[in-house]
Amino acid sequence: MINFELTDEQKQLRDMAHKFALNEIRPVAAECDREGKMPMEVFQKAFELGLMTEFIPEEYGGLGLGSLDTCIISEELAWGCSGISTSMAATGLALTPILIAGTDEQKKKFVQPFAEELKFASFCLTEPGAGSDASAIKTTAKREGDYYILNGRKCFITNGSYASQYTVFAMTDKSLGHRGISCFVVPRDLEGVSAGKKEDKLGQRASDTADVIFEDVKVPAENLLWNEGDGFKIAMMTLDRTRPSVAASAVGVARAAYEYALEYSKERVQFGTPIAMNQAINFMLADMLIGIETARLITWKAAWMADQGMRNTVEASIAKAYAGDLVMKITTDAVQIFGGYGYMKDYPVEKLMRDAKIFQIYEGTNQIQRLVIAKEILVRK
Ligand code: CAA
Image (tube, rainbow, N blue to C red; front, side, top):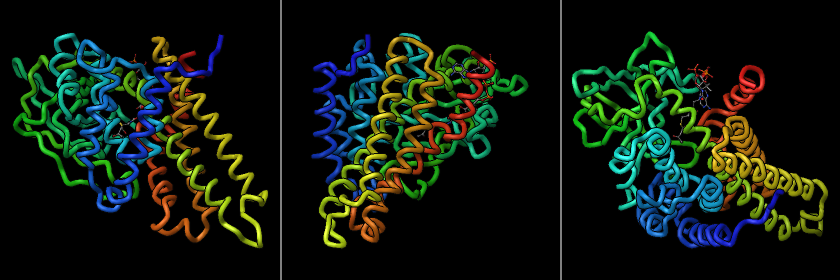
């Protein structure tokens, strides 16, 4: 039996997140975009409402909600500003490997503190020479007694300058390829950990993106998740869980662009009639809605599967690729509907178009999503 109705709790969650996006995020979005600023007061309020800890199980102080609930929240927050919402979600991405692979003790030590006060964490996989090819990482972790000595440089790390804790993927045995990658929790205050300069980006400028550098960092052996060599699998399992919420955020941005375009096209009069009356325009609006509704359905399916404990690799990649490509098209079309005004910073849609681009790139490019889907169809099924 299929039911497309959200529960009363989910509707409340959606309404709360929407109200928060409208009243707290949107008013500061343009300024944060212009100045590349993380709005700490907004994060603090979001934290107090549980909007940054909903995915943390109740026994570790969070709301204990599922992936579908996170998607509902993500869509609304990204509707407000996806730069701001990406910073909020990136902590979840960094804590997910610990939730998947951590012991009870590790969860208490490395997850629970994020439910107690506002803090940021970063997921450190990407390196200058290892983006799509995640198994090509060069960061090393060498066992010495009760420690691993960590050396390397991670790049494009969301929350990199603000994080108090990093989830780091490093080679413990290079000769084993991806089976030689291990995953560590690295507190920021360990000696030898530093953040590089903040990147100046096209879009999602409110989120912090920076290099993170590890120089002879002594990481306690008990900070290893699962066993040596399990890191790549942990990374892949994490991305299966988090890609649906990236897709949901893309839907949120697409919806914002659609709403602005709809409103504007009803008001803008050319040739004596609102431009929405022209088929050239209203077909664009109809296509936007087709895309939003279908992207949300596959996104929710991918999240629902994760909540049932099912492997959702294909569905998570379909959702991420479909919603990521869609948001680029919809925001570009919204700028088109606004015409010359759409190109100006006085109107909201150019920001949405800039923000949209990264959805085709981060958490695995959309080409990588197709590669994942093709591999699952041809090799694993
Ligand atoms: N779940 C569990 N295990 C999985 C898995 C999954 N979804 N996918 C792969 N694996 C396992 C395989 O079974 C295989 O196991 P064995 O050791 O038994 O062989 C192993 O992992 C290797 O799998 P592949 O042969 O498929 O690996 P590959 O190297 O050919 O390709 C890839 C892997 C899918 C291309 C991967 O490298 C990838 O996802 N790349 C993209 C990286 C990415 O998404 N980066 C995003 C960084 S985070 C970010 O952007 C966030 C941000 O800051 C906002």
